[in-house]
Amino acid sequence: MYSIPFFTLGFYPEYLVIGIVLGILIGAYSFFRVNYALNNVNLSKNKQIILSSIIAILSFLFCLNIWSMAAILIFYLFISSLIADLIRIIQKYLIKEKHLNFIPKIHKNGLLAIIIFAAIIIGSVYGMNHIELTEYNLTTEKIDNESYSILFVSDVHYGTVQNTQLVKDSILKMNNLKPDIVVLGGDIVDERTTKDDMQEIFEELGKINSTYGTYYIFGNHDRQPSTMDYINGNRTFSDSDLNQSIEKNRIKILNDDKITINNDIVLVGRSDAEWEDSVNRIDVNKIFNESDLSKYIVVLDHQPVEYEKNAQEGVDLQLSGHTHGGQLFPYGMMYDLTGRLNYGEYEIGDMKQIVSSGLTGWGWPMRNEAKCEYVLININ
Image 1 (cartoon, rainbow, N blue to C red):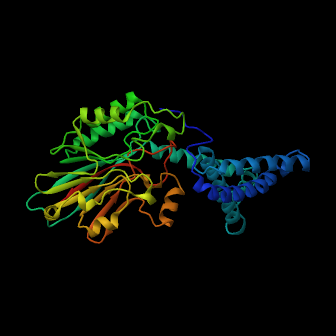
Image 2: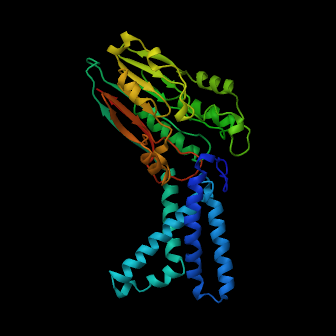
């Protein structure tokens, strides 16, 4: 597993304004909060101001790249301190219990905030290291006398932020489900996955037994060029290596292509949309035809995009990943506020859209939004 860069984890200038606003807010709060904590310390007033200013400036600078580990930790320390302030206010004005008289002291010296911060971090690390099964049950009139189960696995980012043995153990559990169809929804590897790890994960996934095979669509990270590598700028495997490893393990790639399963289900695998706001792909209705509409059409698209258009075209189910369910607060909230699909089951017209939070996460070895999951969809 690679070490996680502290100060940078990819930089996206379109988020700089958010970083500046957050930095000003947290920097100002840090100045007054640190100065308050230093009142009982044997330091001159000037030294207190200098130390408080240094911490405030560092807090501001760390927040400029909101995707960095530094920004995440500073933000959670800020949230922890606000919660500690709220606890102190409640204790002072609402609950005057003598057994809580220790709160003012541990609040003033910052210990209460540190305890809350430690609880958040421990919980987030726990979240990244536990994988669960999520199950959906859907019904359709398009399929007679048959039921199908689809195992959907996305966003593994193998060998980066999660213990690889945990992933292997989860694959053994997936095999016990005996799915009819296995779908790998992209970002199974990324720009930091080594070539050996890339080959290993597809060998493991290729072992999952299914009735009608395993199918793969690309995500935005699997084939990301080396210039986008946010650690060392050097991906260790080529697109050709990736394709060979996938196909060697009896996994079929669907890249703006389709396959019909048992004359009941049409799987339509889409090429990745890359940047959500600039989707430039062939229309989905040019992949399936009029005769397919009598069958149950499942669109596999790494990112949850074009769902309204797909619903209008007669698609029955769309499976996506990419969002990680936000992974870390407040990213999921930002997704929701912008009106984008984030996590779970949605109904768009007559179509169902399922967005998985992924088997792992990206970038940070922590998760406190949604959960690490693999998904089983039962179609009856």
